[in-house]
Length: 159
Image 1 (tube, rainbow, N blue to C red):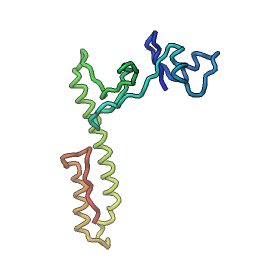
Image 2: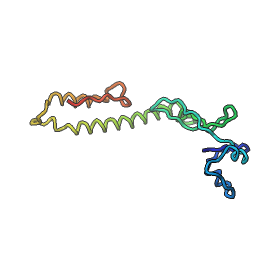
Image 3: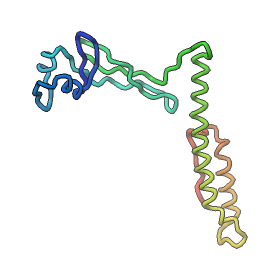
Image 4: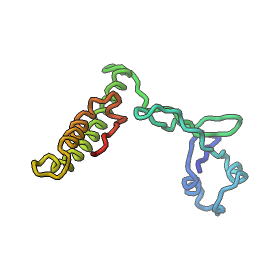
């Protein structure tokens, strides 16, 4: 639980509130009456921000008062701001590219493992349909050409 000090606007946790009042014996669950008597209001959990994965996430942005009650406030992040070196749009593009590159690396690592796991199928004496396995292996190599790469991969089925 979090509490907002009416006088200062500071938001603290239940345990911080108890620490700041070491000579007071509190019940296990703080009541509204106790909180109010110390000049605090409870902070209720607000709704998470609507985001566009994988590039955004919901991040806390303080508290907001709605109809006389305090709620945590969330925004879609990360937030980029222009500065003297580069624009917010350029920072966001670099961030997205970094996420894409990291995801592409993970997918390629997975693809390479799948290829390595079936290397044996290409040996001349392997008791399998070599042509079907060769097609499967080529389909694995082609995953990076899929339009939704690297975030939504349609993995081929093994023969």
